[in-house]
Image (cartoon, rainbow, N blue to C red; front, side, top):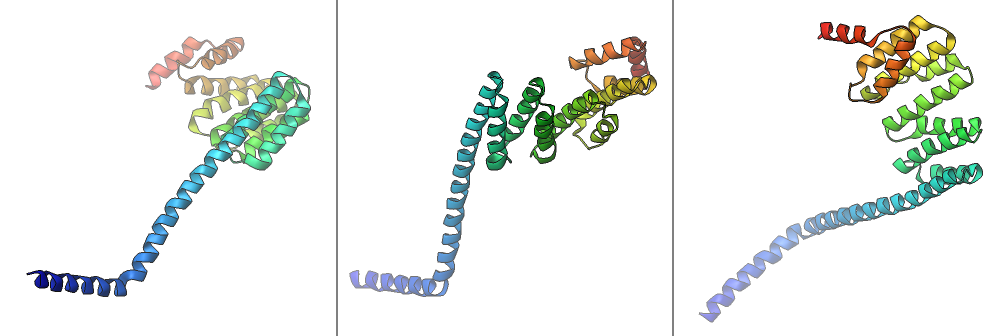
Length: 224
């Protein structure tokens, strides 16, 4: 009986040897590829976490510079952020914060440079849209109205379209084109949800131009 079992085991062993001789290399390479991919994936995740941690530290530096109103320190931190972690959301957030802080510090050129970088390089189109809207504010301040309107031509996420219309209305108002401004503010008002607080500001702008919001609400009801 034992001898019979030994023969069966020998046959199974021979089959395994034959199978391995035929497919062993293929299996080995498949396993190498699988485990190599797993190692690469884990390595990528580790690298991503490491990058995010370092980017967060630089963003904290930008925030501290903003609180201290230290424009030079902020520009250095933002430069490091753009060079090392330009593809992160922290970089876009840092650029927006730097743009605001530098403008308030009277450094319009530095603010424009920071916002332009976000508008052109941010990995998220929402951050790009915010940067463009803020750039238009700088253009209005500088009376660069043609540049402002050109900036507003760039495509934005649908949720930002009412804000673009509102900004376009601001440009027309600054140019003294009240009818064009009215039309854009109406587009903005209709596009904003009544739960969005910013809509109240658009209502104030319309009221200053003699457009009652009640008439817009009635028009909206008829359209529905």
